[in-house]
Image (cartoon, rainbow, N blue to C red):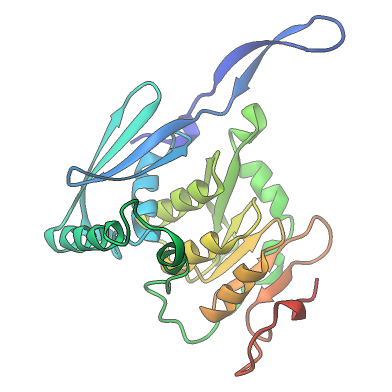
Length: 282
């Protein structure tokens, strides 16, 4: 297993551009090209940090809709090179057939792949595995207190290299169970989801928190993987709020000062009336 907590940053010699010439060594966040391959089929390439790759493989496969259950992923082989990683995964036959059919549909929409209306439909398609009909009970408010302190204690690479997003999972007892860091905010969430799924955590309970702003893609990933409550350190976008309400995902923003702000959850929905973005209280 490749553990992100054991990931080491390369140090580079630098010279300050202004003032007295001072040389120092600065560790920098690592970045590699990560290729996701299924049964020999190249599916996607993401620029990411090279840690927690098993978690990344499972989390990305789930949140991108390649698999809906972990047991559909039969095997994983990791190929490491200087600037790239190949995650070569084996799917069961039914899941592989579904992936091939999906790829044929996407490739056939135009000569250059998805574009125009087709690309919009793909980006805004309904979220799979979203059968909830109501909001979960919110975790106790005390569990959100000092959320930034939780991140400070959990993040390993931020303190040395900077330039790292993070996602954490806090269980129903208020304990920080997992933290995953990455140069990409989407990747950090995928890695965290993968870690939780591999360990059998019930994401309906407790909450997931992210250091980044909350956009639509993070809502889609959270809903598709069964997260009950998502908390961000930056304000969500209006579309993120609309989709969180649509799919009954508790969505909160924890500002630097003051209590967490609930944007989606019990008491925020408006019944049958259409939601108006202008109605959000800032």
